[in-house]
Length: 606
Image (cartoon, rainbow, N blue to C red; front, side):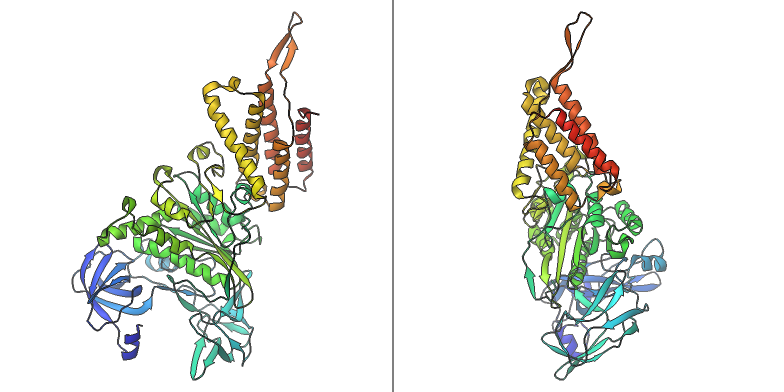
Protein backbone atom coordinates (compact mmCIF):
# COMPACT_ATOMS: atom_id res chain seq x y z
CA UNK A 1 0.00 0.00 0.00
CA UNK A 2 0.96 3.63 -0.34
CA UNK A 3 2.03 5.56 2.74
CA UNK A 4 -1.33 7.29 3.21
CA UNK A 5 -3.38 4.17 2.55
CA UNK A 6 -1.32 2.29 5.11
CA UNK A 7 -1.90 5.00 7.69
CA UNK A 8 -5.64 5.28 7.25
CA UNK A 9 -6.23 1.59 6.64
CA UNK A 10 -8.09 2.61 3.47
CA UNK A 11 -7.39 1.59 -0.10
CA UNK A 12 -6.98 4.17 -2.88
CA UNK A 13 -9.66 3.92 -5.55
CA UNK A 14 -10.68 5.71 -8.72
CA UNK A 15 -12.87 5.49 -11.82
CA UNK A 16 -12.15 5.12 -15.53
CA UNK A 17 -12.82 8.24 -17.60
CA UNK A 18 -10.98 7.57 -20.89
CA UNK A 19 -9.41 4.69 -22.80
CA UNK A 20 -7.19 4.56 -25.91
CA UNK A 21 -6.11 1.05 -26.80
CA UNK A 22 -4.37 -0.22 -23.63
CA UNK A 23 -3.85 3.29 -22.19
CA UNK A 24 -6.53 4.04 -19.60
CA UNK A 25 -6.92 7.30 -17.68
CA UNK A 26 -8.34 7.05 -14.17
CA UNK A 27 -9.85 9.88 -12.14
CA UNK A 28 -8.86 9.81 -8.46
CA UNK A 29 -9.89 11.80 -5.35
CA UNK A 30 -7.82 14.90 -4.63
CA UNK A 31 -6.38 13.43 -1.40
CA UNK A 32 -5.16 10.18 -3.03
CA UNK A 33 -1.50 9.27 -2.82
CA UNK A 34 -0.58 7.25 -5.91
CA UNK A 35 2.95 6.37 -7.02
CA UNK A 36 4.26 6.10 -10.53
CA UNK A 37 4.79 2.42 -11.29
CA UNK A 38 2.07 1.34 -8.85
CA UNK A 39 -0.19 -1.55 -9.83
CA UNK A 40 -3.94 -1.12 -10.01
CA UNK A 41 -6.88 -3.32 -10.98
CA UNK A 42 -9.81 -2.29 -13.20
CA UNK A 43 -13.06 -4.17 -12.54
CA UNK A 44 -14.69 -5.05 -15.88
CA UNK A 45 -17.91 -7.03 -16.48
CA UNK A 46 -17.09 -10.10 -18.57
CA UNK A 47 -20.15 -12.21 -19.25
CA UNK A 48 -21.69 -13.31 -15.96
CA UNK A 49 -18.68 -12.34 -13.87
CA UNK A 50 -16.50 -9.36 -13.09
CA UNK A 51 -12.77 -9.64 -13.80
CA UNK A 52 -9.95 -7.42 -12.58
CA UNK A 53 -7.59 -6.23 -15.29
CA UNK A 54 -4.07 -5.55 -14.06
CA UNK A 55 -2.53 -2.19 -14.99
CA UNK A 56 0.50 -0.05 -14.11
CA UNK A 57 0.52 3.67 -13.38
CA UNK A 58 2.57 5.53 -16.00
CA UNK A 59 1.85 9.15 -15.12
CA UNK A 60 0.42 10.92 -12.07
CA UNK A 61 -1.53 14.15 -12.63
CA UNK A 62 -3.48 16.50 -10.30
CA UNK A 63 -6.61 14.40 -9.94
CA UNK A 64 -5.97 11.63 -12.45
CA UNK A 65 -3.45 8.98 -13.39
CA UNK A 66 -2.56 7.44 -16.75
CA UNK A 67 -2.19 3.65 -16.70
CA UNK A 68 -1.27 0.94 -19.17
CA UNK A 69 -3.25 -2.28 -18.97
CA UNK A 70 -1.49 -5.64 -19.27
CA UNK A 71 -4.53 -7.40 -20.71
CA UNK A 72 -7.05 -6.81 -23.55
CA UNK A 73 -9.24 -3.79 -22.78
CA UNK A 74 -12.39 -4.89 -24.63
CA UNK A 75 -15.55 -3.77 -22.84
CA UNK A 76 -14.09 -0.88 -20.82
CA UNK A 77 -16.39 2.10 -20.37
CA UNK A 78 -16.64 5.34 -18.43
CA UNK A 79 -17.06 5.02 -14.66
CA UNK A 80 -15.65 1.54 -14.07
CA UNK A 81 -14.13 1.21 -10.58
CA UNK A 82 -10.35 1.00 -10.17
CA UNK A 83 -8.54 -0.36 -7.12
CA UNK A 84 -4.93 0.67 -6.40
CA UNK A 85 -2.78 -1.97 -4.70
CA UNK A 86 -0.18 0.36 -3.18
CA UNK A 87 2.54 -1.98 -4.54
CA UNK A 88 4.92 -1.39 -7.42
CA UNK A 89 4.92 -3.88 -10.28
CA UNK A 90 6.60 -6.84 -8.59
CA UNK A 91 7.37 -10.54 -8.88
CA UNK A 92 7.56 -13.30 -6.27
CA UNK A 93 10.84 -15.19 -6.04
CA UNK A 94 11.72 -18.36 -4.19
CA UNK A 95 12.30 -22.10 -4.67
CA UNK A 96 10.43 -23.74 -7.51
CA UNK A 97 11.05 -21.28 -10.35
CA UNK A 98 13.54 -23.42 -12.28
CA UNK A 99 11.96 -25.35 -15.12
CA UNK A 100 8.88 -23.11 -15.12
CA UNK A 101 7.35 -21.31 -18.11
CA UNK A 102 5.88 -17.92 -17.15
CA UNK A 103 4.05 -15.23 -19.04
CA UNK A 104 5.30 -11.64 -18.98
CA UNK A 105 3.83 -11.07 -15.50
CA UNK A 106 5.13 -14.31 -13.91
CA UNK A 107 1.95 -16.34 -14.18
CA UNK A 108 2.60 -20.04 -14.72
CA UNK A 109 1.36 -20.84 -18.21
CA UNK A 110 0.89 -24.54 -17.47
CA UNK A 111 -1.42 -23.71 -14.55
CA UNK A 112 -3.34 -21.14 -16.64
CA UNK A 113 -3.73 -23.71 -19.40
CA UNK A 114 -5.14 -26.25 -16.94
CA UNK A 115 -7.62 -23.70 -15.61
CA UNK A 116 -8.57 -21.81 -18.78
CA UNK A 117 -7.80 -24.21 -21.64
CA UNK A 118 -6.14 -23.12 -24.88
CA UNK A 119 -7.48 -19.55 -24.75
CA UNK A 120 -6.32 -17.67 -21.65
CA UNK A 121 -8.97 -15.64 -19.90
CA UNK A 122 -8.61 -12.02 -18.85
CA UNK A 123 -7.97 -11.49 -15.17
CA UNK A 124 -6.51 -14.97 -14.63
CA UNK A 125 -3.52 -15.03 -12.31
CA UNK A 126 -1.52 -17.78 -10.65
CA UNK A 127 1.02 -18.20 -7.89
CA UNK A 128 4.58 -17.97 -9.19
CA UNK A 129 5.59 -21.21 -7.42
CA UNK A 130 3.84 -24.20 -5.88
CA UNK A 131 2.74 -23.24 -2.37
CA UNK A 132 2.07 -26.84 -1.31
CA UNK A 133 5.35 -28.48 -2.26
CA UNK A 134 7.71 -29.20 0.64
CA UNK A 135 11.40 -28.37 0.56
CA UNK A 136 14.21 -29.80 2.69
CA UNK A 137 15.50 -26.77 4.62
CA UNK A 138 18.95 -26.68 6.25
CA UNK A 139 19.67 -23.61 8.44
CA UNK A 140 23.02 -21.83 8.21
CA UNK A 141 22.61 -19.33 11.10
CA UNK A 142 21.73 -19.70 14.75
CA UNK A 143 19.68 -17.71 17.26
CA UNK A 144 21.51 -14.53 18.27
CA UNK A 145 23.39 -14.06 15.00
CA UNK A 146 23.31 -10.65 13.36
CA UNK A 147 22.31 -10.65 9.68
CA UNK A 148 21.75 -8.12 6.90
CA UNK A 149 19.64 -8.00 3.74
CA UNK A 150 20.68 -10.66 1.24
CA UNK A 151 22.50 -12.83 3.79
CA UNK A 152 21.69 -16.52 3.73
CA UNK A 153 19.60 -17.95 6.58
CA UNK A 154 19.68 -21.45 5.15
CA UNK A 155 19.21 -23.33 1.91
CA UNK A 156 17.00 -25.87 0.20
CA UNK A 157 18.16 -28.21 -2.59
CA UNK A 158 16.59 -27.47 -5.98
CA UNK A 159 17.67 -29.78 -8.79
CA UNK A 160 21.48 -29.68 -8.58
CA UNK A 161 21.57 -26.22 -6.94
CA UNK A 162 21.49 -25.08 -3.36
CA UNK A 163 18.73 -22.45 -3.31
CA UNK A 164 19.63 -19.83 -0.72
CA UNK A 165 16.89 -18.53 1.57
CA UNK A 166 17.99 -14.95 2.18
CA UNK A 167 17.15 -12.11 4.53
CA UNK A 168 14.48 -9.96 2.81
CA UNK A 169 16.17 -7.41 0.59
CA UNK A 170 14.04 -4.48 1.74
CA UNK A 171 15.28 -4.68 5.37
CA UNK A 172 17.73 -1.93 6.34
CA UNK A 173 20.61 -2.27 8.78
CA UNK A 174 21.50 -5.19 11.02
CA UNK A 175 18.88 -7.64 12.33
CA UNK A 176 19.16 -10.29 15.04
CA UNK A 177 18.00 -13.86 14.51
CA UNK A 178 15.34 -14.39 17.18
CA UNK A 179 14.22 -17.77 15.87
CA UNK A 180 15.37 -20.08 13.08
CA UNK A 181 13.59 -23.17 11.81
CA UNK A 182 15.17 -26.54 12.47
CA UNK A 183 16.30 -28.75 9.60
CA UNK A 184 13.31 -30.41 7.99
CA UNK A 185 10.63 -30.15 5.32
CA UNK A 186 8.65 -26.95 4.90
CA UNK A 187 6.47 -25.21 2.32
CA UNK A 188 7.46 -21.84 0.90
CA UNK A 189 4.88 -20.10 3.14
CA UNK A 190 6.12 -21.59 6.42
CA UNK A 191 8.08 -19.26 8.70
CA UNK A 192 11.77 -20.05 8.44
CA UNK A 193 13.03 -17.34 10.77
CA UNK A 194 11.98 -14.47 12.99
CA UNK A 195 14.25 -11.41 12.83
CA UNK A 196 14.23 -8.52 15.27
CA UNK A 197 15.56 -4.97 15.29
CA UNK A 198 14.73 -3.15 18.50
CA UNK A 199 10.98 -3.50 19.05
CA UNK A 200 10.34 -4.55 15.45
CA UNK A 201 9.98 -8.18 14.42
CA UNK A 202 9.77 -9.71 10.93
CA UNK A 203 8.67 -13.22 10.00
CA UNK A 204 10.64 -14.64 7.07
CA UNK A 205 9.48 -17.43 4.78
CA UNK A 206 11.01 -18.73 1.55
CA UNK A 207 9.34 -16.14 -0.70
CA UNK A 208 10.13 -12.49 -1.40
CA UNK A 209 8.36 -9.80 -3.42
CA UNK A 210 10.68 -7.73 -5.61
CA UNK A 211 9.81 -4.66 -7.72
CA UNK A 212 10.82 -5.37 -11.30
CA UNK A 213 11.86 -1.89 -12.43
CA UNK A 214 14.24 -1.24 -9.54
CA UNK A 215 17.70 -2.82 -9.58
CA UNK A 216 18.44 -5.04 -6.58
CA UNK A 217 21.51 -3.63 -4.83
CA UNK A 218 21.66 -5.99 -1.84
CA UNK A 219 25.34 -6.78 -2.46
CA UNK A 220 28.63 -5.50 -1.08
CA UNK A 221 30.09 -4.10 -4.30
CA UNK A 222 30.06 -4.27 -8.08
CA UNK A 223 33.14 -5.90 -9.54
CA UNK A 224 34.97 -4.78 -12.68
CA UNK A 225 34.55 -6.86 -15.81
CA UNK A 226 37.79 -8.78 -16.14
CA UNK A 227 37.09 -12.01 -18.03
CA UNK A 228 34.95 -13.34 -20.84
CA UNK A 229 32.09 -15.81 -20.62
CA UNK A 230 33.07 -19.09 -22.34
CA UNK A 231 30.25 -20.08 -24.69
CA UNK A 232 32.19 -22.96 -26.31
CA UNK A 233 31.40 -21.39 -29.70
CA UNK A 234 34.65 -20.75 -31.58
CA UNK A 235 33.79 -17.48 -33.40
CA UNK A 236 32.32 -15.98 -30.23
CA UNK A 237 35.02 -16.97 -27.73
CA UNK A 238 37.91 -16.15 -30.06
CA UNK A 239 36.91 -13.13 -32.10
CA UNK A 240 34.01 -11.49 -30.28
CA UNK A 241 33.71 -12.70 -26.66
CA UNK A 242 31.06 -11.36 -24.31
CA UNK A 243 32.28 -10.36 -20.83
CA UNK A 244 31.00 -12.35 -17.88
CA UNK A 245 28.65 -9.87 -16.29
CA UNK A 246 28.49 -7.80 -19.48
CA UNK A 247 26.09 -7.64 -22.39
CA UNK A 248 25.98 -8.40 -26.09
CA UNK A 249 23.50 -7.98 -28.92
CA UNK A 250 22.73 -10.17 -31.93
CA UNK A 251 21.25 -8.08 -34.75
CA UNK A 252 20.20 -9.76 -37.96
CA UNK A 253 17.45 -10.04 -40.51
CA UNK A 254 14.77 -12.71 -40.40
CA UNK A 255 16.14 -16.20 -40.97
CA UNK A 256 19.76 -15.41 -40.13
CA UNK A 257 19.80 -17.71 -37.10
CA UNK A 258 19.44 -15.40 -34.08
CA UNK A 259 17.23 -17.77 -32.08
CA UNK A 260 19.31 -20.84 -33.00
CA UNK A 261 22.47 -19.04 -31.86
CA UNK A 262 20.84 -18.10 -28.56
CA UNK A 263 19.77 -21.70 -27.99
CA UNK A 264 23.33 -22.90 -28.65
CA UNK A 265 24.67 -20.40 -26.12
CA UNK A 266 22.04 -21.44 -23.56
CA UNK A 267 23.07 -25.06 -23.94
CA UNK A 268 26.85 -24.71 -24.17
CA UNK A 269 27.84 -21.59 -22.19
CA UNK A 270 29.59 -22.08 -18.86
CA UNK A 271 26.71 -20.64 -16.87
CA UNK A 272 24.63 -21.77 -13.89
CA UNK A 273 21.16 -20.37 -14.66
CA UNK A 274 19.63 -19.48 -18.03
CA UNK A 275 16.61 -17.17 -18.26
CA UNK A 276 15.00 -17.15 -21.72
CA UNK A 277 12.85 -14.07 -22.22
CA UNK A 278 10.67 -14.28 -25.33
CA UNK A 279 9.68 -10.62 -25.26
CA UNK A 280 7.47 -10.39 -28.33
CA UNK A 281 8.84 -13.24 -30.41
CA UNK A 282 6.51 -15.04 -32.80
CA UNK A 283 4.47 -17.80 -31.18
CA UNK A 284 5.92 -20.51 -33.43
CA UNK A 285 9.49 -19.87 -32.26
CA UNK A 286 8.44 -19.66 -28.61
CA UNK A 287 6.57 -22.95 -28.87
CA UNK A 288 9.71 -24.51 -30.34
CA UNK A 289 11.68 -23.28 -27.31
CA UNK A 290 9.12 -24.64 -24.85
CA UNK A 291 9.00 -28.01 -26.60
CA UNK A 292 12.75 -28.45 -27.17
CA UNK A 293 14.28 -27.18 -23.92
CA UNK A 294 12.80 -29.83 -21.59
CA UNK A 295 14.32 -32.56 -23.77
CA UNK A 296 17.77 -31.07 -24.38
CA UNK A 297 20.61 -32.69 -22.47
CA UNK A 298 22.73 -30.33 -20.39
CA UNK A 299 26.43 -30.92 -21.23
CA UNK A 300 27.43 -29.52 -17.83
CA UNK A 301 25.34 -31.78 -15.62
CA UNK A 302 24.17 -34.64 -17.81
CA UNK A 303 20.60 -33.81 -16.77
CA UNK A 304 17.96 -31.88 -18.69
CA UNK A 305 18.65 -28.27 -19.66
CA UNK A 306 15.23 -27.20 -18.38
CA UNK A 307 16.35 -27.94 -14.80
CA UNK A 308 18.48 -24.79 -14.82
CA UNK A 309 16.25 -22.70 -17.08
CA UNK A 310 13.40 -20.26 -16.55
CA UNK A 311 11.34 -19.31 -19.62
CA UNK A 312 9.35 -16.08 -19.77
CA UNK A 313 6.95 -16.34 -22.67
CA UNK A 314 5.32 -13.19 -24.01
CA UNK A 315 4.63 -13.63 -27.70
CA UNK A 316 3.87 -10.90 -30.24
CA UNK A 317 0.17 -11.81 -30.02
CA UNK A 318 0.04 -10.97 -26.29
CA UNK A 319 -0.64 -7.44 -24.96
CA UNK A 320 2.22 -5.01 -25.58
CA UNK A 321 2.31 -3.75 -22.00
CA UNK A 322 3.16 -7.18 -20.60
CA UNK A 323 5.73 -7.55 -23.40
CA UNK A 324 7.43 -4.41 -22.08
CA UNK A 325 7.34 -5.71 -18.49
CA UNK A 326 8.74 -9.15 -19.41
CA UNK A 327 12.36 -7.99 -19.84
CA UNK A 328 12.33 -6.38 -16.40
CA UNK A 329 10.78 -9.51 -14.89
CA UNK A 330 13.67 -11.48 -16.40
CA UNK A 331 16.20 -8.95 -15.02
CA UNK A 332 14.73 -9.20 -11.53
CA UNK A 333 14.84 -13.00 -11.53
CA UNK A 334 18.42 -12.85 -12.83
CA UNK A 335 19.50 -10.47 -10.05
CA UNK A 336 17.89 -12.75 -7.46
CA UNK A 337 19.89 -15.79 -8.61
CA UNK A 338 23.03 -13.64 -8.90
CA UNK A 339 22.81 -12.76 -5.19
CA UNK A 340 23.15 -16.49 -4.45
CA UNK A 341 26.64 -16.37 -6.00
CA UNK A 342 25.51 -17.92 -9.30
CA UNK A 343 26.44 -17.02 -12.88
CA UNK A 344 23.22 -16.11 -14.69
CA UNK A 345 22.53 -15.56 -18.38
CA UNK A 346 19.49 -13.73 -19.79
CA UNK A 347 18.62 -14.34 -23.43
CA UNK A 348 16.12 -11.73 -24.66
CA UNK A 349 14.43 -12.47 -27.98
CA UNK A 350 13.61 -10.09 -29.57
CA UNK A 351 14.34 -6.65 -28.18
CA UNK A 352 13.08 -5.14 -31.45
CA UNK A 353 9.57 -6.38 -30.77
CA UNK A 354 9.92 -5.23 -27.18
CA UNK A 355 10.81 -1.76 -28.52
CA UNK A 356 7.86 -1.95 -30.91
CA UNK A 357 5.68 -2.36 -27.83
CA UNK A 358 7.16 0.88 -26.51
CA UNK A 359 6.40 2.50 -29.86
CA UNK A 360 2.76 1.45 -29.66
CA UNK A 361 2.58 2.98 -26.19
CA UNK A 362 3.92 6.30 -27.53
CA UNK A 363 1.23 6.30 -30.21
CA UNK A 364 -1.57 5.45 -27.77
CA UNK A 365 -0.52 8.19 -25.33
CA UNK A 366 -0.25 10.79 -28.07
CA UNK A 367 3.39 11.61 -27.27
CA UNK A 368 5.81 13.10 -29.78
CA UNK A 369 7.69 10.15 -31.30
CA UNK A 370 11.36 9.91 -32.12
CA UNK A 371 13.08 8.25 -35.07
CA UNK A 372 10.70 5.92 -37.00
CA UNK A 373 8.00 6.32 -34.37
CA UNK A 374 10.01 4.89 -31.47
CA UNK A 375 10.06 6.76 -28.13
CA UNK A 376 12.35 9.77 -28.06
CA UNK A 377 14.09 8.24 -25.02
CA UNK A 378 14.53 4.80 -26.62
CA UNK A 379 18.24 4.66 -25.79
CA UNK A 380 17.46 5.34 -22.13
CA UNK A 381 14.84 2.56 -22.07
CA UNK A 382 17.25 0.10 -23.69
CA UNK A 383 19.97 1.19 -21.27
CA UNK A 384 17.78 0.53 -18.22
CA UNK A 385 17.51 -3.10 -19.29
CA UNK A 386 21.16 -3.76 -20.15
CA UNK A 387 22.38 -1.85 -17.07
CA UNK A 388 21.03 -4.67 -14.91
CA UNK A 389 23.96 -6.84 -16.05
CA UNK A 390 27.12 -6.97 -13.93
CA UNK A 391 29.40 -8.90 -11.58
CA UNK A 392 28.93 -8.43 -7.84
CA UNK A 393 30.40 -9.51 -4.54
CA UNK A 394 27.54 -10.70 -2.36
CA UNK A 395 27.10 -10.26 1.39
CA UNK A 396 27.70 -14.03 1.64
CA UNK A 397 31.30 -13.48 0.43
CA UNK A 398 30.66 -15.07 -2.96
CA UNK A 399 30.74 -13.69 -6.49
CA UNK A 400 27.81 -13.74 -8.89
CA UNK A 401 27.31 -12.44 -12.40
CA UNK A 402 24.42 -11.53 -14.68
CA UNK A 403 25.12 -11.50 -18.41
CA UNK A 404 22.51 -10.24 -20.89
CA UNK A 405 22.40 -11.16 -24.59
CA UNK A 406 19.59 -9.68 -26.65
CA UNK A 407 18.62 -10.24 -30.27
CA UNK A 408 17.60 -7.36 -32.52
CA UNK A 409 15.44 -7.87 -35.63
CA UNK A 410 15.86 -4.77 -37.83
CA UNK A 411 13.62 -4.66 -40.87
CA UNK A 412 15.53 -5.87 -43.90
CA UNK A 413 18.65 -6.43 -41.80
CA UNK A 414 19.29 -2.68 -41.72
CA UNK A 415 21.79 -2.01 -38.92
CA UNK A 416 20.95 1.71 -38.99
CA UNK A 417 17.65 0.75 -37.34
CA UNK A 418 17.02 2.89 -34.19
CA UNK A 419 16.87 -0.17 -31.91
CA UNK A 420 20.23 -1.43 -33.19
CA UNK A 421 21.81 1.99 -32.74
CA UNK A 422 20.30 2.45 -29.27
CA UNK A 423 21.67 -0.95 -28.28
CA UNK A 424 25.22 -0.41 -29.57
CA UNK A 425 26.24 2.00 -26.83
CA UNK A 426 25.02 -0.39 -24.11
CA UNK A 427 26.98 -3.48 -25.17
CA UNK A 428 30.51 -4.82 -24.82
CA UNK A 429 30.08 -7.21 -27.76
CA UNK A 430 28.20 -6.99 -31.06
CA UNK A 431 27.50 -10.07 -33.20
CA UNK A 432 26.11 -8.89 -36.52
CA UNK A 433 24.48 -11.71 -38.48
CA UNK A 434 24.90 -11.57 -42.25
CA UNK A 435 22.07 -12.63 -44.55
CA UNK A 436 24.45 -13.79 -47.28
CA UNK A 437 26.38 -16.00 -44.87
CA UNK A 438 23.12 -17.43 -43.57
CA UNK A 439 21.94 -18.18 -47.11
CA UNK A 440 25.25 -19.96 -47.75
CA UNK A 441 24.55 -22.13 -44.64
CA UNK A 442 27.53 -20.72 -42.76
CA UNK A 443 26.53 -21.25 -39.14
CA UNK A 444 26.74 -19.20 -37.04
CA UNK A 445 26.26 -16.44 -39.60
CA UNK A 446 28.28 -13.90 -37.59
CA UNK A 447 29.92 -11.45 -39.97
CA UNK A 448 33.57 -11.23 -38.85
CA UNK A 449 33.92 -7.73 -40.32
CA UNK A 450 30.76 -6.16 -38.91
CA UNK A 451 31.09 -7.60 -35.41
CA UNK A 452 33.26 -6.45 -32.53
CA UNK A 453 34.12 -6.98 -28.88
CA UNK A 454 35.83 -4.80 -26.31
CA UNK A 455 37.71 -7.61 -24.55
CA UNK A 456 40.04 -10.49 -25.43
CA UNK A 457 38.83 -14.08 -25.38
CA UNK A 458 40.68 -17.33 -26.02
CA UNK A 459 43.41 -15.47 -27.94
CA UNK A 460 45.06 -12.08 -27.55
CA UNK A 461 43.73 -8.92 -29.16
CA UNK A 462 46.78 -8.82 -31.48
CA UNK A 463 46.20 -12.38 -32.71
CA UNK A 464 42.54 -11.64 -33.21
CA UNK A 465 43.24 -8.47 -35.18
CA UNK A 466 45.71 -10.28 -37.44
CA UNK A 467 43.12 -12.90 -38.35
CA UNK A 468 40.40 -10.30 -38.94
CA UNK A 469 42.79 -8.40 -41.21
CA UNK A 470 43.35 -11.58 -43.24
CA UNK A 471 39.57 -12.03 -43.58
CA UNK A 472 39.15 -8.40 -44.64
CA UNK A 473 41.89 -8.84 -47.24
CA UNK A 474 40.17 -11.98 -48.56
CA UNK A 475 36.85 -10.10 -48.83
CA UNK A 476 38.56 -7.47 -50.98
CA UNK A 477 40.19 -10.21 -53.05
CA UNK A 478 36.82 -11.88 -53.63
CA UNK A 479 35.39 -8.58 -54.85
CA UNK A 480 38.33 -8.18 -57.20
CA UNK A 481 37.87 -11.70 -58.60
CA UNK A 482 34.29 -10.89 -59.60
CA UNK A 483 35.76 -8.32 -61.99
CA UNK A 484 39.07 -9.82 -63.15
CA UNK A 485 38.64 -13.52 -62.41
CA UNK A 486 41.35 -15.62 -60.79
CA UNK A 487 43.74 -14.77 -63.62
CA UNK A 488 44.00 -11.21 -62.36
CA UNK A 489 45.44 -12.31 -59.00
CA UNK A 490 49.01 -13.05 -58.05
CA UNK A 491 49.75 -16.52 -56.67
CA UNK A 492 50.44 -15.04 -53.23
CA UNK A 493 47.14 -13.11 -53.11
CA UNK A 494 45.20 -16.18 -54.25
CA UNK A 495 46.86 -18.36 -51.62
CA UNK A 496 46.05 -15.89 -48.86
CA UNK A 497 42.47 -15.79 -50.08
CA UNK A 498 42.27 -19.60 -49.86
CA UNK A 499 43.76 -19.59 -46.35
CA UNK A 500 41.19 -17.05 -45.16
CA UNK A 501 38.37 -19.15 -46.64
CA UNK A 502 39.86 -22.22 -44.94
CA UNK A 503 39.92 -20.43 -41.58
CA UNK A 504 36.32 -19.35 -42.10
CA UNK A 505 35.14 -22.88 -42.91
CA UNK A 506 37.17 -24.67 -40.24
CA UNK A 507 37.07 -22.22 -37.36
CA UNK A 508 34.22 -19.74 -37.77
CA UNK A 509 31.65 -22.40 -38.66
CA UNK A 510 30.36 -25.13 -36.37
CA UNK A 511 28.08 -28.08 -36.92
CA UNK A 512 25.25 -27.61 -34.41
CA UNK A 513 23.93 -31.11 -35.23
CA UNK A 514 27.20 -32.77 -34.18
CA UNK A 515 27.59 -33.18 -30.42
CA UNK A 516 31.39 -32.81 -30.58
CA UNK A 517 31.59 -29.78 -32.86
CA UNK A 518 28.60 -28.01 -31.27
CA UNK A 519 30.52 -27.78 -27.98
CA UNK A 520 34.15 -26.82 -28.66
CA UNK A 521 35.84 -26.37 -25.30
CA UNK A 522 38.31 -23.55 -24.79
CA UNK A 523 41.43 -25.74 -24.82
CA UNK A 524 40.43 -27.28 -28.13
CA UNK A 525 39.72 -23.82 -29.53
CA UNK A 526 43.21 -22.67 -28.60
CA UNK A 527 44.86 -25.73 -30.17
CA UNK A 528 43.13 -25.47 -33.54
CA UNK A 529 43.56 -21.68 -33.62
CA UNK A 530 47.34 -21.98 -33.07
CA UNK A 531 47.46 -24.61 -35.80
CA UNK A 532 45.62 -22.37 -38.28
CA UNK A 533 47.56 -19.29 -37.18
CA UNK A 534 50.85 -21.04 -37.94
CA UNK A 535 49.50 -22.16 -41.31
CA UNK A 536 48.24 -18.70 -42.29
CA UNK A 537 51.11 -16.52 -41.07
CA UNK A 538 54.20 -18.67 -40.51
CA UNK A 539 54.12 -21.24 -43.31
CA UNK A 540 55.39 -20.53 -46.81
CA UNK A 541 53.40 -22.48 -49.37
CA UNK A 542 54.20 -23.13 -53.02
CA UNK A 543 51.92 -24.56 -55.69
CA UNK A 544 53.00 -25.62 -59.17
CA UNK A 545 50.95 -26.61 -62.16
CA UNK A 546 50.51 -30.33 -62.83
CA UNK A 547 51.50 -31.56 -66.26
CA UNK A 548 51.51 -34.81 -68.21
CA UNK A 549 53.02 -35.81 -71.54
CA UNK A 550 50.78 -36.00 -74.58
CA UNK A 551 51.09 -38.50 -77.43
CA UNK A 552 53.94 -36.52 -78.91
CA UNK A 553 55.78 -36.45 -75.60
CA UNK A 554 55.11 -32.77 -75.02
CA UNK A 555 54.12 -31.59 -71.51
CA UNK A 556 50.50 -30.47 -71.21
CA UNK A 557 49.02 -28.61 -68.23
CA UNK A 558 46.42 -30.77 -66.46
CA UNK A 559 45.86 -28.43 -63.53
CA UNK A 560 47.03 -24.86 -63.21
CA UNK A 561 48.87 -23.81 -60.07
CA UNK A 562 45.74 -22.07 -58.80
CA UNK A 563 43.62 -25.14 -59.47
CA UNK A 564 46.16 -27.23 -57.52
CA UNK A 565 45.99 -24.72 -54.67
CA UNK A 566 42.19 -24.75 -54.63
CA UNK A 567 42.08 -28.57 -54.64
CA UNK A 568 44.61 -28.62 -51.77
CA UNK A 569 42.61 -26.09 -49.75
CA UNK A 570 39.39 -28.07 -50.26
CA UNK A 571 41.00 -31.30 -49.11
CA UNK A 572 42.59 -29.70 -46.07
CA UNK A 573 39.32 -27.97 -45.17
CA UNK A 574 37.38 -31.22 -45.31
CA UNK A 575 40.02 -33.04 -43.25
CA UNK A 576 40.02 -30.41 -40.51
CA UNK A 577 36.22 -30.12 -40.45
CA UNK A 578 36.03 -33.88 -39.95
CA UNK A 579 38.60 -33.50 -37.15
CA UNK A 580 36.34 -30.86 -35.55
CA UNK A 581 33.59 -33.50 -35.32
CA UNK A 582 35.83 -36.20 -33.84
CA UNK A 583 36.52 -36.64 -30.14
CA UNK A 584 40.12 -35.85 -29.21
CA UNK A 585 40.67 -39.19 -27.49
CA UNK A 586 39.46 -41.04 -30.57
CA UNK A 587 42.33 -42.58 -32.60
CA UNK A 588 40.62 -41.20 -35.71
CA UNK A 589 41.31 -37.64 -34.52
CA UNK A 590 45.06 -38.29 -34.38
CA UNK A 591 44.94 -39.88 -37.81
CA UNK A 592 43.07 -36.91 -39.30
CA UNK A 593 45.54 -34.40 -37.86
CA UNK A 594 48.45 -36.37 -39.30
CA UNK A 595 46.73 -36.30 -42.71
CA UNK A 596 46.30 -32.52 -42.40
CA UNK A 597 49.97 -32.04 -41.58
CA UNK A 598 50.96 -34.26 -44.49
CA UNK A 599 48.85 -32.17 -46.87
CA UNK A 600 50.56 -29.01 -45.64
CA UNK A 601 54.06 -30.49 -45.90
CA UNK A 602 53.49 -31.42 -49.57
CA UNK A 603 53.38 -27.75 -50.52
CA UNK A 604 55.51 -26.30 -47.76
CA UNK A 605 58.62 -24.51 -48.96
CA UNK A 606 61.85 -25.70 -47.41
